[in-house]
Length: 230
Image 1 (cartoon, one colour):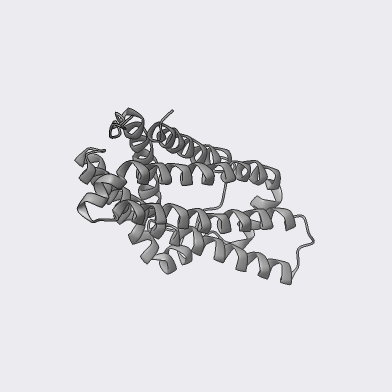
Image 2 (image 1 turned 90 degrees about the vertical axis):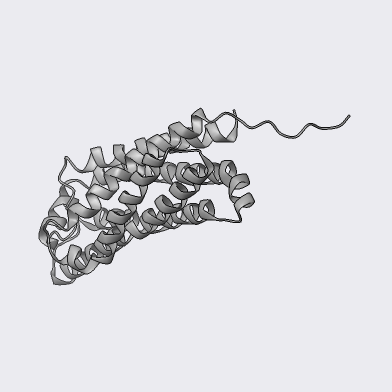
Protein backbone atom coordinates (compact mmCIF):
# COMPACT_ATOMS: atom_id res chain seq x y z
CA UNK A 1 0.00 0.00 0.00
CA UNK A 2 1.52 3.34 -1.06
CA UNK A 3 2.04 6.27 1.31
CA UNK A 4 -0.76 8.33 -0.24
CA UNK A 5 -3.34 5.64 0.48
CA UNK A 6 -2.01 5.12 4.01
CA UNK A 7 -2.17 8.85 4.78
CA UNK A 8 -5.66 9.03 3.27
CA UNK A 9 -6.86 6.22 5.52
CA UNK A 10 -5.19 7.96 8.46
CA UNK A 11 -7.14 11.15 7.69
CA UNK A 12 -10.41 9.21 7.63
CA UNK A 13 -9.52 7.42 10.86
CA UNK A 14 -8.57 10.69 12.55
CA UNK A 15 -11.85 12.31 11.51
CA UNK A 16 -13.82 9.31 12.75
CA UNK A 17 -12.11 9.23 16.15
CA UNK A 18 -12.48 12.94 16.92
CA UNK A 19 -16.16 12.74 16.03
CA UNK A 20 -16.56 9.55 18.08
CA UNK A 21 -14.96 11.19 21.10
CA UNK A 22 -17.47 14.02 20.92
CA UNK A 23 -20.38 11.62 20.37
CA UNK A 24 -19.47 9.98 23.68
CA UNK A 25 -19.10 13.19 25.72
CA UNK A 26 -21.40 15.83 24.23
CA UNK A 27 -24.72 13.97 24.73
CA UNK A 28 -23.70 13.36 28.35
CA UNK A 29 -23.53 17.12 28.88
CA UNK A 30 -19.85 18.03 28.37
CA UNK A 31 -19.68 21.67 29.55
CA UNK A 32 -19.29 24.24 26.82
CA UNK A 33 -16.63 26.94 26.80
CA UNK A 34 -17.51 29.58 29.38
CA UNK A 35 -19.58 27.26 31.59
CA UNK A 36 -19.54 28.04 35.32
CA UNK A 37 -17.36 26.00 37.66
CA UNK A 38 -20.31 24.51 39.58
CA UNK A 39 -21.72 22.91 36.44
CA UNK A 40 -18.25 21.74 35.44
CA UNK A 41 -17.72 20.09 38.83
CA UNK A 42 -21.09 18.36 38.63
CA UNK A 43 -20.38 16.95 35.17
CA UNK A 44 -16.96 15.54 36.01
CA UNK A 45 -18.23 14.11 39.28
CA UNK A 46 -21.11 12.33 37.55
CA UNK A 47 -19.34 11.29 34.34
CA UNK A 48 -15.69 10.76 35.29
CA UNK A 49 -15.65 7.24 33.83
CA UNK A 50 -17.17 8.48 30.59
CA UNK A 51 -14.48 11.15 30.31
CA UNK A 52 -11.90 8.39 30.56
CA UNK A 53 -13.59 6.44 27.77
CA UNK A 54 -13.81 9.50 25.54
CA UNK A 55 -10.17 10.34 26.17
CA UNK A 56 -8.96 6.81 25.43
CA UNK A 57 -9.22 7.30 21.67
CA UNK A 58 -7.21 10.53 21.58
CA UNK A 59 -3.68 9.04 21.56
CA UNK A 60 -4.61 6.97 18.50
CA UNK A 61 -6.17 10.06 16.91
CA UNK A 62 -2.94 12.02 17.37
CA UNK A 63 -0.91 9.23 15.78
CA UNK A 64 -3.28 9.17 12.80
CA UNK A 65 -3.15 12.97 12.46
CA UNK A 66 0.65 12.87 12.34
CA UNK A 67 0.59 10.02 9.82
CA UNK A 68 -1.88 11.94 7.65
CA UNK A 69 0.26 15.07 7.72
CA UNK A 70 3.52 13.26 7.00
CA UNK A 71 1.94 11.36 4.12
CA UNK A 72 0.43 14.52 2.66
CA UNK A 73 3.84 16.23 2.77
CA UNK A 74 5.37 13.20 1.03
CA UNK A 75 2.78 13.40 -1.76
CA UNK A 76 3.02 17.17 -2.18
CA UNK A 77 6.75 17.58 -1.70
CA UNK A 78 7.84 17.25 -5.34
CA UNK A 79 5.39 19.91 -6.49
CA UNK A 80 6.33 22.18 -3.57
CA UNK A 81 10.04 21.77 -4.21
CA UNK A 82 9.70 22.62 -7.90
CA UNK A 83 7.91 25.87 -7.00
CA UNK A 84 10.22 26.70 -4.11
CA UNK A 85 7.32 26.68 -1.62
CA UNK A 86 6.72 25.05 1.75
CA UNK A 87 2.96 25.26 2.32
CA UNK A 88 2.74 21.52 3.01
CA UNK A 89 5.35 21.76 5.76
CA UNK A 90 3.48 24.77 7.16
CA UNK A 91 0.32 22.67 7.32
CA UNK A 92 2.12 19.70 8.86
CA UNK A 93 3.49 21.97 11.59
CA UNK A 94 -0.09 22.99 12.37
CA UNK A 95 -1.13 19.36 12.80
CA UNK A 96 1.77 18.62 15.14
CA UNK A 97 1.11 21.74 17.23
CA UNK A 98 -2.62 21.02 17.52
CA UNK A 99 -1.75 17.53 18.77
CA UNK A 100 0.41 19.06 21.49
CA UNK A 101 -2.16 21.65 22.56
CA UNK A 102 -5.04 19.19 22.60
CA UNK A 103 -2.96 16.83 24.72
CA UNK A 104 -3.10 19.59 27.33
CA UNK A 105 -6.88 19.86 26.94
CA UNK A 106 -7.37 16.12 27.45
CA UNK A 107 -4.94 16.08 30.39
CA UNK A 108 -6.97 18.78 32.15
CA UNK A 109 -10.20 16.85 31.58
CA UNK A 110 -8.66 13.71 33.06
CA UNK A 111 -7.31 15.68 36.03
CA UNK A 112 -10.75 17.14 36.72
CA UNK A 113 -12.36 13.71 36.43
CA UNK A 114 -9.83 12.01 38.71
CA UNK A 115 -10.24 14.58 41.49
CA UNK A 116 -13.98 15.18 41.14
CA UNK A 117 -14.84 12.75 43.96
CA UNK A 118 -12.70 14.65 46.48
CA UNK A 119 -14.35 16.66 49.21
CA UNK A 120 -15.63 19.97 47.94
CA UNK A 121 -14.08 23.01 49.59
CA UNK A 122 -13.02 26.52 48.72
CA UNK A 123 -9.55 25.39 47.67
CA UNK A 124 -10.95 22.54 45.59
CA UNK A 125 -13.46 24.77 43.82
CA UNK A 126 -10.80 27.39 43.18
CA UNK A 127 -8.43 24.82 41.69
CA UNK A 128 -11.18 23.37 39.49
CA UNK A 129 -12.12 26.84 38.30
CA UNK A 130 -8.53 27.59 37.37
CA UNK A 131 -8.13 24.29 35.54
CA UNK A 132 -11.35 24.80 33.61
CA UNK A 133 -10.37 28.34 32.61
CA UNK A 134 -7.05 26.96 31.32
CA UNK A 135 -8.96 24.20 29.50
CA UNK A 136 -11.20 26.74 27.77
CA UNK A 137 -8.26 28.94 26.79
CA UNK A 138 -6.26 26.05 25.30
CA UNK A 139 -9.32 24.60 23.60
CA UNK A 140 -10.18 27.90 21.90
CA UNK A 141 -6.61 28.92 21.06
CA UNK A 142 -6.09 25.52 19.43
CA UNK A 143 -8.10 26.90 16.53
CA UNK A 144 -4.93 28.77 15.56
CA UNK A 145 -3.08 25.56 14.81
CA UNK A 146 -6.04 23.96 13.06
CA UNK A 147 -6.11 27.07 10.87
CA UNK A 148 -2.39 26.67 10.12
CA UNK A 149 -2.99 23.05 9.06
CA UNK A 150 -5.98 24.02 6.91
CA UNK A 151 -4.23 26.91 5.17
CA UNK A 152 -0.98 25.07 4.51
CA UNK A 153 -2.42 21.80 3.23
CA UNK A 154 -5.23 23.51 1.31
CA UNK A 155 -2.87 25.82 -0.60
CA UNK A 156 -0.36 23.03 -1.21
CA UNK A 157 -3.09 20.62 -2.33
CA UNK A 158 -4.71 23.06 -4.76
CA UNK A 159 -1.38 24.16 -6.27
CA UNK A 160 -0.32 20.55 -6.76
CA UNK A 161 -3.67 19.55 -8.26
CA UNK A 162 -4.33 17.05 -5.47
CA UNK A 163 -7.57 18.69 -4.29
CA UNK A 164 -10.17 20.75 -6.13
CA UNK A 165 -10.37 24.54 -5.76
CA UNK A 166 -13.71 24.35 -3.92
CA UNK A 167 -12.10 22.04 -1.35
CA UNK A 168 -9.22 24.45 -0.87
CA UNK A 169 -11.67 27.33 -0.50
CA UNK A 170 -13.66 25.32 2.05
CA UNK A 171 -10.49 24.82 4.06
CA UNK A 172 -9.67 28.53 3.98
CA UNK A 173 -13.17 29.47 5.19
CA UNK A 174 -12.83 26.95 8.03
CA UNK A 175 -9.42 28.41 8.87
CA UNK A 176 -10.89 31.92 8.96
CA UNK A 177 -13.64 30.87 11.38
CA UNK A 178 -11.21 29.06 13.67
CA UNK A 179 -8.77 31.98 13.58
CA UNK A 180 -11.52 34.44 14.48
CA UNK A 181 -12.54 32.24 17.39
CA UNK A 182 -8.92 32.05 18.59
CA UNK A 183 -8.45 35.83 18.34
CA UNK A 184 -11.64 36.33 20.37
CA UNK A 185 -10.58 33.81 23.03
CA UNK A 186 -11.00 36.21 26.01
CA UNK A 187 -14.57 36.95 24.96
CA UNK A 188 -15.37 33.32 24.13
CA UNK A 189 -14.25 31.96 27.50
CA UNK A 190 -15.84 34.75 29.55
CA UNK A 191 -19.24 34.74 27.86
CA UNK A 192 -21.39 31.68 27.17
CA UNK A 193 -22.92 33.07 23.98
CA UNK A 194 -22.97 32.96 20.18
CA UNK A 195 -19.26 33.68 19.76
CA UNK A 196 -18.59 30.03 20.54
CA UNK A 197 -20.46 29.11 17.36
CA UNK A 198 -17.58 30.51 15.28
CA UNK A 199 -15.27 27.79 16.53
CA UNK A 200 -17.97 25.12 16.29
CA UNK A 201 -18.73 25.96 12.66
CA UNK A 202 -15.03 26.04 11.83
CA UNK A 203 -14.48 22.68 13.55
CA UNK A 204 -17.35 20.99 11.70
CA UNK A 205 -15.96 22.31 8.41
CA UNK A 206 -12.52 21.01 9.46
CA UNK A 207 -13.91 17.48 9.88
CA UNK A 208 -15.52 17.57 6.42
CA UNK A 209 -12.28 18.96 4.95
CA UNK A 210 -10.34 16.08 6.55
CA UNK A 211 -12.63 13.42 5.09
CA UNK A 212 -12.52 14.87 1.58
CA UNK A 213 -8.73 15.31 1.78
CA UNK A 214 -8.35 11.70 2.87
CA UNK A 215 -10.44 10.52 -0.08
CA UNK A 216 -8.36 12.66 -2.45
CA UNK A 217 -5.17 11.06 -1.16
CA UNK A 218 -6.63 7.57 -1.52
CA UNK A 219 -7.69 8.26 -5.12
CA UNK A 220 -4.33 9.67 -6.12
CA UNK A 221 -2.64 7.70 -8.89
CA UNK A 222 0.97 6.91 -7.91
CA UNK A 223 3.56 8.63 -10.08
CA UNK A 224 6.06 6.09 -11.47
CA UNK A 225 9.62 6.67 -10.39
CA UNK A 226 12.47 7.13 -12.88
CA UNK A 227 13.66 3.95 -14.61
CA UNK A 228 16.70 2.29 -13.11
CA UNK A 229 19.57 1.05 -15.21
CA UNK A 230 20.64 -2.56 -15.04
